[in-house]
Length: 80
Image (cartoon, rainbow, N blue to C red; front, top):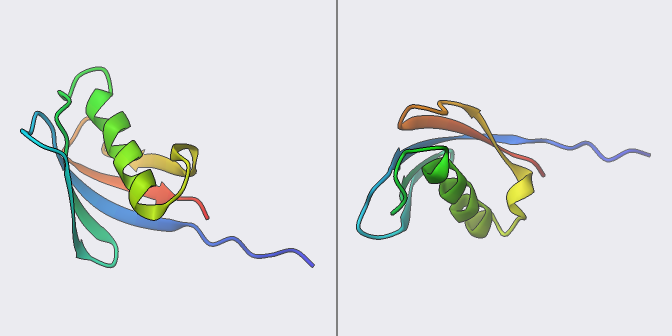
């Protein structure tokens, strides 16, 4: 019998170039993430992915950016 995997989509607003790292949960599927990295060459996206992985206690490979690669409002997929 196969187990059914259900992936979760979350909305994340990212603030790059912040003074400190932080993650604020606005609702069940909405977060605000502040990162020190600049929004260049995917640096802020990568750090956001790592912060989300730590929050969900998953390896960063289980977090995938779906939409908003070059915008502050993003959608990430959490692979369970």
